[in-house]
Image 1 (cartoon, helix red, strand yellow):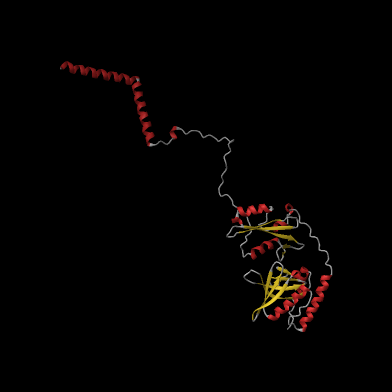
Image 2 (cartoon, rainbow, N blue to C red):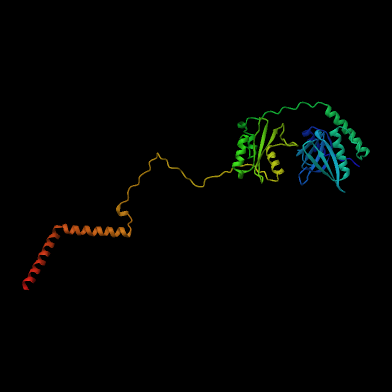
Length: 345
């Protein structure tokens, strides 16, 4: 059986710079955690005693990693003629890797067991060339683990939040400078805005992601820690996840929940009308009263006005001196005609 070829030289060099670990074995695999329904395909590299998982063979940045120093056991089960399932058992979880054939599964199991337990397994059916590679891997890994690692560079604490002139431009829209309790209140009071908030962590070297998980029995709140690394960020999960930016942190949560987690984004509502409150101390200008000639009268007002005009005309006529003389003469004439009529009778 021929040994599997390593990754292309350029990508391998780039990955070595990121991980700072020697490459022992690599190949495509399908991965799922216990309880998950579907497998997800990755390109896997065994570097040191860590399995790095990449979304595809061309990626230089890994998506996940499985640290084998706490591995309890590794088992291999044949699912069908062309498929093997390997189970990695850790103290707090189980991870299943689906491999394309039995020979590939045997070789993966041998390398994983060798770097995790620092001994070559004896119950596997391996070719002399494979056993020779395992012996070289064991010697290299023993020397690596016995050599004290250089002290890691202490990451510089980030600038205070109010000084993030450049960083804030790359911040996810769901980042808010709020406390844990404030983030919880925001999520519960406005669930329509989203159910995931990125906020400052408990110290200057971390952030935190607070999520509201709606359930049939009620909603639950969970908090996740995101550490600031020298060249990116690490989501502190059972298997830590490294990302280069905080936007990738949010994208990871969205992807892992199939879009059920949505960033909390406050809506930008604007008024559509200008409604100004009256100033009680401001005197309004008074409008001059309309003249009578400009008033519009109803038919009833017209009749009343016309009646008043007639009464005024009558009074004017009665009180006029010339009209009074005519009126007296008319009365005297009537009186004389009445007396003439009575004399004839």
